[in-house]
Image 1 (cartoon, helix red, strand yellow):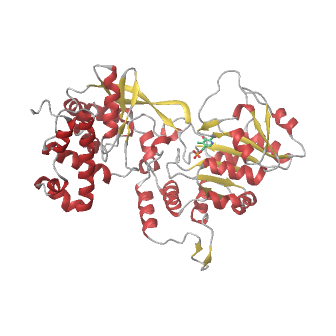
Image 2 (cartoon, helix red, strand yellow; image 1 turned 180 degrees about the vertical axis):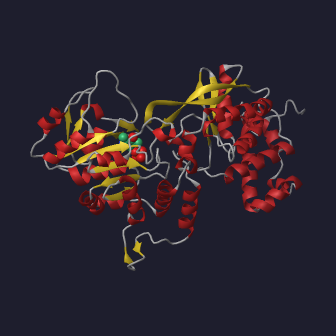
Image 3 (spheres, rainbow, N blue to C red; image 1 turned 90 degrees about the vertical axis):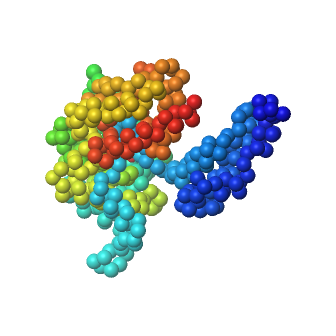
Length: 476
Ligand SMILES: *Cc1c(COP(=O)(O)O)cnc(C)c1O
């Protein structure tokens, strides 16, 4: 029977034995590196894949070279973490799906040390007895926001839930109809309020709410007044809302607290960095807010965390609530947060030390120069796969921060000959050892370079791209 008419069964039988491949000289180094067990597993997996392919009608038997390459691929893929780094070329700087803020070097060091050793997490070193984990960062938060006290939980959604539960359960929470926000996922202000056990009292209209709307809603059952920062949308035109200081006065005259969910919460003056103004916790506290909640990993540029700052007795209530225990953060988060907050306190240039701020403040001229530098190399690498051009684009801050504002940037624009190939290109980029995530726009794939650090990341980007042709072939 000739090769051409061989039935799949024969071809499958012609695949080499596991033992043969295990002793293959071109796999010697791999065997040394990962051990015989891991290598055997990879060989079995590769052979099984080929048996299935031949069973499904493939008419050509793989040669040993192909098998060796595939086995190497399987070993490498198995060694890669699911939580491996990717390139964020989406143009969204604080990308929730990509883990938001990368940490600063000092925060990374703090995390590594805290991971490796025991730390005095809930242990008062001065007094030699049990302590409170919030103490690790509370002093810094107080100093940076002007609040009396602070507590930290898993994320801002948790902070809002904890604050509403501790202050408003069984009572009424009053909020403007213009602020019944949905942040994404299942976080909707009205639902969170209900979950917290508050009775929701909506006042005013979507576009306009006045002081008298709040005053008329106040009564015996009122627990707190809530203001939520419109982080991911913008109402324009005939609008009006009650200034924070006035809302604080209204709440205090009635003897109830006033809470602001800031969402992002910048710890530095964004206008001084040439960015659009972003509300700061310190401003909310100065305006009279009793509790202010914000995220650790949005514009603050730290780890995922929910920070609550405010009046001492209210923070004490939050700390002693059973939910606090369920929502608390671990030592790694607190280590990263402490180091990040120290940067705000001590550094003259937080916009250089914190990657999120440094990406947001990157001058477009620098991005353009980088794009020009990369263009000829990327063109050469992607020859025969895609046409490559550099075009201006607009990055966004992301995670509901400053939703309307855009930052001028530059992108590598990859164009393929047929529409179908665009999905293939995206797939190939996603399969790289360090995946690249771009954005499809006007029938092309845009790689916004704003988040590609010139010193550390540029070479890694080129090294990855060099491997693309292999993944492109496999992604067919
Ligand atoms: C982002 C955001 C939240 C949720 O914060 P997470 O840190 O994602 O939990 C809540 N409220 C507002 C206004 C936000 O912008």
